[in-house]
Length: 362
Image 1 (cartoon, helix red, strand yellow):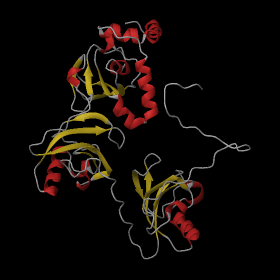
Image 2 (cartoon, one colour):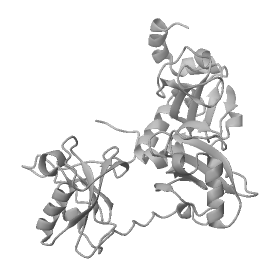
Image 3 (tube, one colour):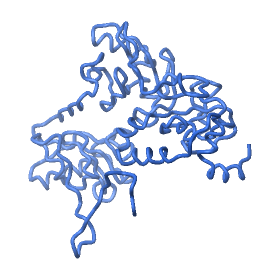
Image 4 (cartoon, helix red, strand yellow):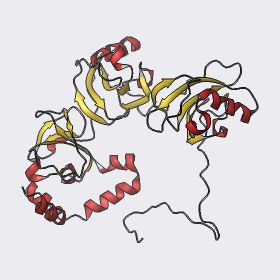
């Protein structure tokens, strides 16, 4: 393939007689020098180490069926007795817990499980240290906050909270708890339901809303007198903004069915990348759960929709430089944009819209 739109690409070159590249070595063990040699353990799934002496096991239903049996196999390999200290069903082939199981429970309905195996004399594995704080030196010490889910920091003074329904039930209450821990008054400045145990926003909630139907929520807590840090986007300069949402770069777009019809088209009018699309519920920033949209999905049954756009330099950091440059190339080679939004979008997507208009006339 002739590629002239990026300065870098990953290539694989094999010597004669070789048909497949050797498996990649495991990444550096963050727990090297600790009590266990996790990367040497049997049936380690995709080199996934979830903590010291804790791993994601594959071939579980066929080979082990219990974490106790797996730990026995680890002990045989290491030449010492290993004892099971924990078992968990993972959420999505990762280290996020879905449910806790018992060490001796016979499990034949899943191919992978998280097991913790400890050597003799060890009663509990040490907690993994949090990653470096990208907001160190800022207004908040996020990694010291209570009930931080999987060390997930979503922004300065913004975190993913666990045990939410049992302990807090509102972000205002959580921020009060943060304030008690830090010894200063903290004020809630934002609350969001996350998509899938991450920092992606599914819907915007209010700080004082009582929420007892989810175990995790994103909360933003600011020291008294602080103002939210500047965001990535200046939504006030965007066209057809019906409502600016309490989530950076997310807006309720007006004239959607007549001028844009996809969030991808809307974001590209500002040379930005669409990273989210939703139908709103009752002319606000709450997501209508009956409509699950994609950025490039045609949506002509409503005059407004929620679109989240991000600058390309931010996309570069999150999706990789090569892909971002491809996006830049696509936008740079788009047709010139006339002033009228609807004409502009149609001209830039003329061929696409011709096909769409035949099937979905406005």
